[in-house]
Figure (cartoon, rainbow, N blue to C red):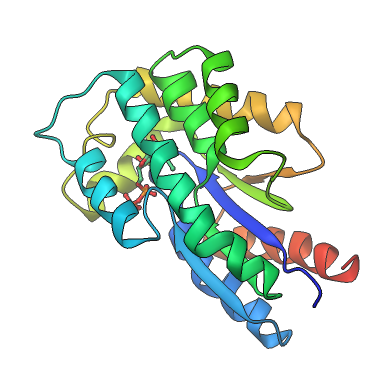
Length: 208
Ligand code: TYD
């Protein structure tokens, strides 16, 4: 059985990745692929409970506790969902993965990157996504989009400076891993963003 591909979507809150997710799945299914859609933190019963704690704005926690819970949820997610699906030949699309820990806990909270690398190695070994779509938007635009949609969670209620650091960390990582992480200018219209994503996915499918 040919192993499936692992695609992750990243961006600051309000970057528009959830809108794109829906038709990315449709595009892959039209190609005859079986797709597992999942998210982080979450994706398993335990992970979803950890997500509830992590997003609850009434709960304060140390930045390292936050990082450890993110990776704990991820360990479970890999074991129960991601690895089994890939092994069965399914394609896995995850709304966020480890780049979010480097961006939010590393960039946003200022945690030591080497500690995050240790957790990454412990949690996933050499496994990395085959492709990461990073939806890039200026912080003001992201914040504007979030405030229109819903009540802010524990991350979304952070100030602009936090998201500037998150965005800078994402861009830094995208430059560090240009083969895997593709930057998409998500300040364009939905149709333009969709076209950009389609081109990247077509490329991946052609090289599969
Ligand atoms: P998000 O994926 O944006 O979901 P929704 O669109 O429902 O708000 O919410 C998850 C939040 O968790 C987001 O603010 C980023 C944060 N996060 C981290 O800080 N570190 C991580 O490792 C992950 C996976 C997410």
